[in-house]
Image (cartoon, rainbow, N blue to C red; front, side, top):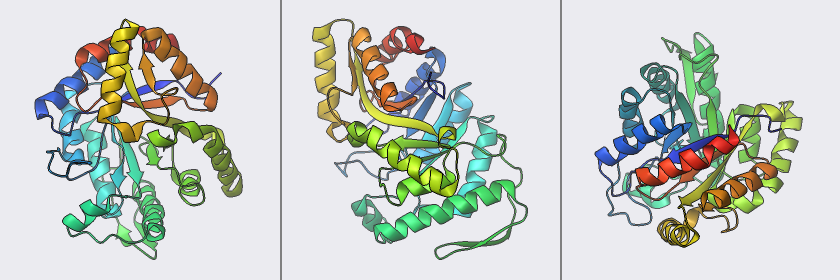
Length: 312
């Protein structure tokens, strides 16, 4: 039996979509029984920088009072864009606004063009990973110690308060996204409640879990305490012909998220169930699914009615 419940999350409309689209999808997911919705943390479209995109933190914060039960998070917040002490305060407030439904998703950042366009320094990956490690240390201290003090190479805080504390205790879940085996997965072992494997590395999940298990042993962390999440593409339809057309459309729209056509959660309901089972066998228990830039409510409903119940 999986050590964690099987969960299904959906990526929200942001690229070239309206605010009303995001509200519609979030409310549909909330109503239909999905477990979470997620926004990206980018300032312009990828790969087309001219494509409009909503800012992720604002979008998620605005959706909190418009939904009731679903968890809300980012896949993932870029460590360079917000000072960790300020982010800890922002996250604690959003946890209250959402009545304890916020998940803090963090990553080291990667999109150099975006950094440069917005005048944000783009340090080497080693420095960005150090920033991520120190940021998560600061955030956890801000949520659990009073006052909190930390002096690191990249950031420092001194006698910092974060009142009110988050609703969730001891603190909201922390998701870390990324695939780097030597450093990133060590940071996961140190800090994360959830590790999210990127879509393009879907085939490598089992191998990376072996590496993560080794890091957990080294830092004396219970590997089974970490929830394993897999980012993936999704498309579903009643017939194989319709499902093939839907699959081709989502793969053409988001080719960089595909870790292999045999693993994407696409096809008829029966085929989608089989692919979820295949990834569970590889070690994942959570799925964050992109059903396209602006998924239809009809597709989400079919998935919720025919796939999710098989894992409840």
